Amino acid sequence: MVALLEAQMKEMNPNLDSIADYRNKVSVYNERVEELNVVTNERDDTKKQYDEWRKRRLDEFMAGFNTISLKLKEMYQLNMILCTFLYCSIDKINYKHLSIHFIKICSFCFSFSKLHFVYRIFI
Image 1 (spheres, helix red, strand yellow):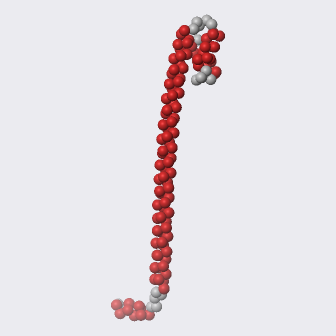
Image 2 (cartoon, helix red, strand yellow; image 1 turned 90 degrees about the horizontal axis):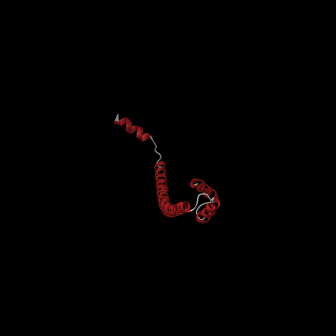
């Protein structure tokens, strides 16, 4: 059996160029894999920077939004206190007088339609 295999090997003419081609292809493949790794690392760094900027932008926006919300809430509460006080201090029978004072006091925070709504609630 071994003799038969040795005889077959002597008859074969292997092409050793295919081994050199394989080695060349492996080296090209390894170079491309290295390039891919470099580009992937650059992409990951860029995405990480983008995500940091995006989070920072969101945090700054939310901080400003919360500040504005608190100020508007304070203004609204102050305005409602002033309007309630004004309503309590004005005679209910004189509606024109009441609406003029409401417009003077509440105009900085309410539009006329909301003012009219508040006027109807208090009367």
